[in-house]
Length: 450
Image (cartoon, rainbow, N blue to C red; front, side):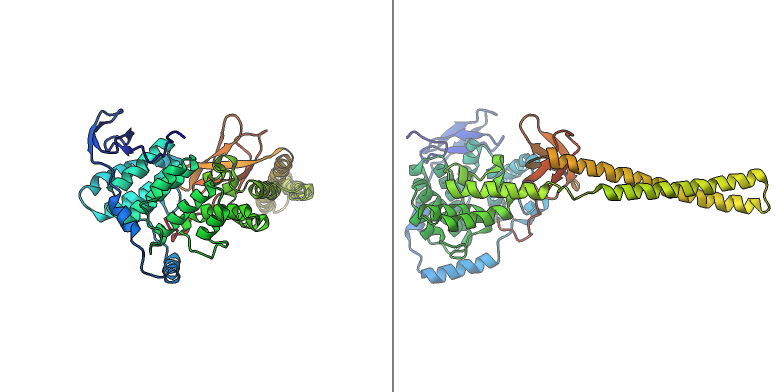
């Protein structure tokens, strides 16, 4: 097999001036950026300190180590406040990726001044940016951060992500090489979870079901997993169960995951952890098909959701009230023309109340027309609506721009949406830009681990 985009024998780093990925030699030396012509001088890749640390066995027993990890699981690590203020606790909108990259480059420059806070920012910004980058840029961001970050904890997590990407690419030798400098029994939850995910991904690529379950456990509560990778761990665990002949348990795990996170079954947003290695080929497709039907039934307005009766009753009542109001107005005009005794008082009172009643009748008639239009729109949505997915592209104030993902030109909506992501919707293609029933994603909890 030839080299892949995440081969350990390659070296890809970031231009610190423009942020472009650059190929470099493992032994270091001068390198010129092909985009801005900036020249950089790099040292050789040195993994020896981490390899030596990984070779030293942890003295704590496995049961005590797991207890420490579970204690950390109860108190998840948060992102630096400066990142949360700008980008929030969860994922970022696509239009924020440029700002994330700029913040990453700024933190990289400041890191050379020796600030531990800048190292922490660089690490979290790397995790935030990586899922949204193409293969080459993702490799460059991860590897460059590994080479400059002083904290072994940060380096292990990012090396594990490189190992996972190598497994995605089918380069199992590279996946093993990226994993070699990593500690297999750390006392830190994030380090341990990253190692478990990378190791189980490598086992999945080798179709080794027992090893997957030995690494991740047969049940979610067997070992603590950082929330950042809980979804991925669930899919890989289900794959291990399927490989060992327990398809029912695998299906139950996947159904619970996808039912709680329907955005994970969007065709264009399917987890790479599942699709690239064809994980859970039987139970995944069965669960996805079932949930798509359930979502469609939930979103699609039922035939009895809006009946014609209320609109008819409201319209008749409005017409009656309107006639009464017009009658009072006519009475006021007649009293004034005929000069009845006390006609000024009659005209004023009848005119005032006639106007008010007429206005009320007009409002009722208008409501009846609106109700009827909504009923027709619901019926049209029920009959011709297409169950698909929408993606939150950007946010302005409390409004987000949604892109409905259909074949052909995308359709955009402006709706209230607090979080980025992809989520199910029912879209009426006969009235593009006007008809949408969606389930926007829920905002992340402040304690979300990163």
